[in-house]
Image (cartoon, rainbow over all chains, first blue to last red; front, side):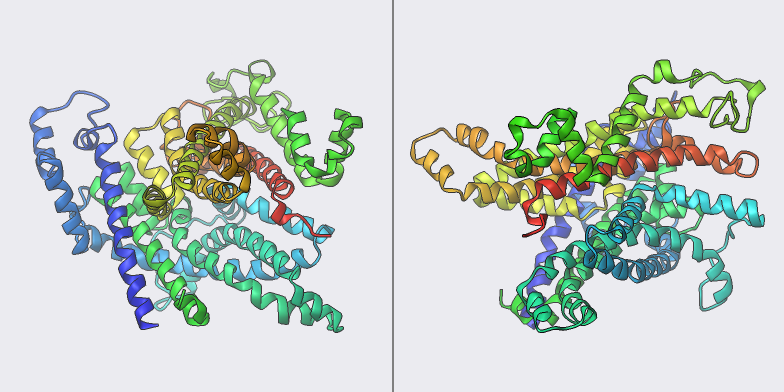
Length: 317
Length: 302
């Protein structure tokens, strides 16, 4: 197991290096002068001196390979420079916003699993019945309805019915659980419903596959109850892909949080991305995009290691 | 379009009946066997008709402000009401269907075609080329779809064609993976070996013998990505990175004013959202049924 972990750790280095390079390329090679964009030069006249100063500040006057080297060295030390908007180090700004997004992502994942697994199971067991159609319609609907619109509807409903406005300050659950709950419940449900849709579909399809296996037929043949066949035999074996999905989804949640946090004006990582884009705060954009890829790679690694822990065959593969 | 799709969907089922099955019967059979897919197709068709004829169907000019009719409730003149400039919401939604369909189709088509080509190259060449392309796709896959699109769109600037580019790039690795897997299994077939042994040029082997056999997964992934692309367009426009005002884009219609006038005119925030959801819902339903029908692995045994 130790060798396996070491091997996997070494394998993520090229991927992360590639991701860092790709982010650099996107930000530099795509047509458009970042310094000009920051100064709003695409809209009107611009002071040449200011432009030169901005290029210098961003290090854009250096040759491309020096810029690339500086960026990589920063990535290695986890130093992503300072935000152009607030002047604070990017990492520090990020750490302020991380707890909220992590809480949102964790709770939403939990909500989605609690909804998705029973529904997906039910749909698979009663394939092509009205239950199956209903579950499929609900889950396809969850994928079709934009998260930000669900958020808008929630706020609309709350504002009209209760005259409620979203609270502005984030209260951690360990300080005031009730205030935290009030703030998080709607965003969590909004994000959770969407991810429940994905997980439900996955549960249904893996469950369908497993239900066609020979050992399930054997279980039926020896006269077991439906409950025993489905829960005891089929559920366990259909969970591995679902666990992977929940894991990778968790990493991808940040993408989903971008819009949800914007709608609910929550000051989390997702909104940080949107604000950085709006403020043309390119050091922050660059850092956050890399870090989402980074967290994805890490979560994937953890999922793989859990697999290997449960299934020794993988380790020797 | 409709007839070719229905015959595709039936695949093996129609083979025996094919000579006697008229188009009408095929459609009826499709509705019976795949009611959800048929519903999806109906929604897509309706959306296309609205988009194509919005010039004549729409009761008002979608750009024309009418301050006398500001914040009109849904009524007989304005079925969906009007926005803060007095623009007719129904007309704007009808025109919005054009942008949604345009971005959805082009982004999905461009992304899947590029990805598909890379997938076929990767599978056919094998070796180092395959390894390199695969790693590249892995790296691209590490970025959440929306975040990558957001970054690209933010650099290219808000415009419809840039949105298409921004949305199609994250689709490339997803399409490449699926097509590569399909191409790999096609490559193993004896007939490919036979053609190679006969001395066929590489180009001929790829174009005549491999590409036609990965068309099915290609079509599946194009339809599967359509709904997502429309959704991504809405999200980018909502965040201010898509089409710019006063373009009637569904996502844009939901940003800003929709929430600030929530109490006064909730219909501004309701109808464009229904349009997005219904459209994407239709594409997803149809894509799902298509996959069920074309993917033999998912077909019910026995």
